[in-house]
Image (tube, rainbow, N blue to C red; front, side, top):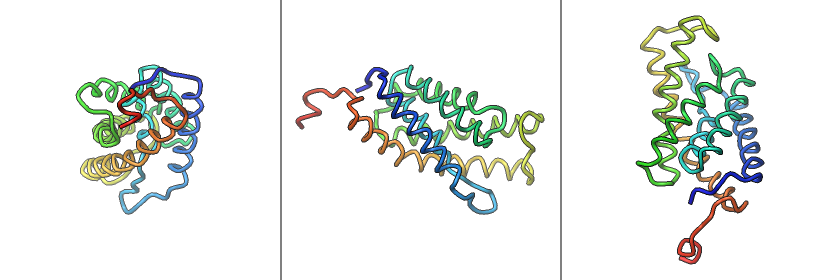
Length: 178
């Protein structure tokens, strides 16, 4: 079901990255932990779990550039999204290709990326360290990863529908006709 990377895939990826960045930017932060789902990570995980390596790299680059443009990541979004895409792409052999797999891969990738960003902030690379200490940061990273994983479910389902509608997915005869 993994189709090659086509020009219409790039157009769909660019539209998905811009839409995810816009939604991520306008969505208000929730509660004392200032939680906000990482829709850009969900797009990267979709391409990491369900598409080929060229699409995965392109998604990591575009979403990293969008995250850097939004100034929401400390230490460079392309680095964090690239590492998450690599982890998601290597874990895809153990998981079936569906929306739940994208969400399951998104949670640990968000935890690792959040922890790495927090460590970079501690070292003075990027933005200031949010107050509250280590326990506050750990709870915030875990909760943000969980809601990002939950956001990956509808994002992955929508991306699959759009990919299928654009003809980016090659289906076998059995899948097409039942």
